[in-house]
Length: 177
Image (cartoon, rainbow, N blue to C red; front, top):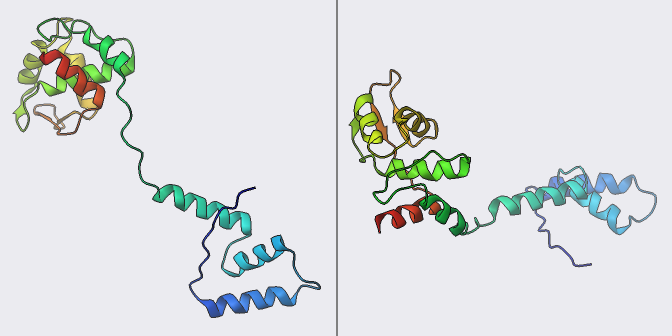
């Protein structure tokens, strides 16, 4: 069985020593290895050694470096490119949520950045970018997914500047070719 190194530190060594001494006074014999571990961690404020170990492992997980960005899903990209015609217009609305999101990113990319649009202007812009005739669906989905923001009365729309996922960037590069 391999050993897991668990660093042990206390804020106040004097309080730690007093607590440990009180616990040792109540024992009739020398503590076993496991009992000694429990005495030590109890003196520093944990319920038992198991509690100490779980706390340490959760801190390690939180401090661990984030994993690199996920791999590009080329199968999804190939499937999604077929949703667009040779002019880059969205032919039909995908059934799968994962496909819809990437198609929305393509629609998002075609909204000029840092500009405000009226409802009619954003609707006209989206109308030119698809062939299935439901610009209201696209407009609503862009707002619901946090890609476009609108004021409370719905009179002004503005694209939010966020980085699209890898698949959306790849679909965009395919459509530009």
